[in-house]
Length: 360
Image (cartoon, rainbow, N blue to C red):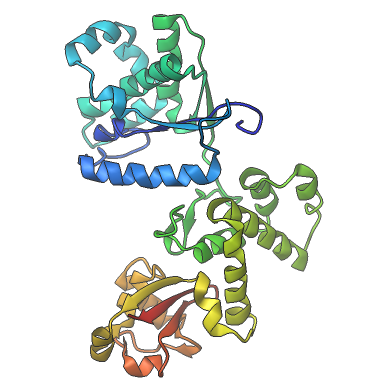
């Protein structure tokens, strides 16, 4: 939409995060303090800056606003008087997200019930302040977004619009966005560029073309040229998908380190030391290494396992390695001897996931 001349308005939910969104949740969302909200807001803001062009010179330069700017200053009685009459319990109960929440055992608090009103008011404020016309969101937000469209029409006689996108699933019907190591984070400190690349590289044959159309900026002509690829060629298409998706988020300059890592670790390349640059990395002190650090703890810290239990299963199943050597004992430790005079070692989980432990 920005490339077509429209101006994106990124709304950060600094205000609504103090309440919690009931949509699709079995339980009330944990309330966050101001410090955590600011930290989360800063992290989300940095991610958006990688996908949108922000500035103050062009009419379609993106802007970022925080709904805490207007929600935190609202006076309760005045807000009820001015906007309360535009919402009915009957209408709110008709939305599927609220129905599902009411059917679950966990209590549905009045605090959460207000979320729909606040999100609707956000749309009204964005319309007034920035001439926003279209709100985009996930299909689970349909009820909240329609409430904003209706509020704009009733209060300001303004025609607003809502556009939702369905939950993206893989060809086998599973929710997209999970890896063997957990959630797919967009922040490099949560998920390394290498692991992000591997997530896309591991796309199934049936999904690769569809995901290219959704998650890259390749032209349809370029993508259609790959649609007939089979066998080994489909793996080339997966590499194209991984390269393009990773370049969009982390920049194209990180791709060389990722490919060097893969070449040296999995294709018999020579420059193993230089090739670890793209891997997730943790540090241990010389004192810790002298005492010995359990491998199961290192696998968890490197996000190669979600828990110690999972790390133990990895070792028991023969999928855990120190370099090229299989780790057989789930109680084994990494000590100075394991570094063999080097400053770093590589731990592997299965054939495609790895991380680096470096002496600090």
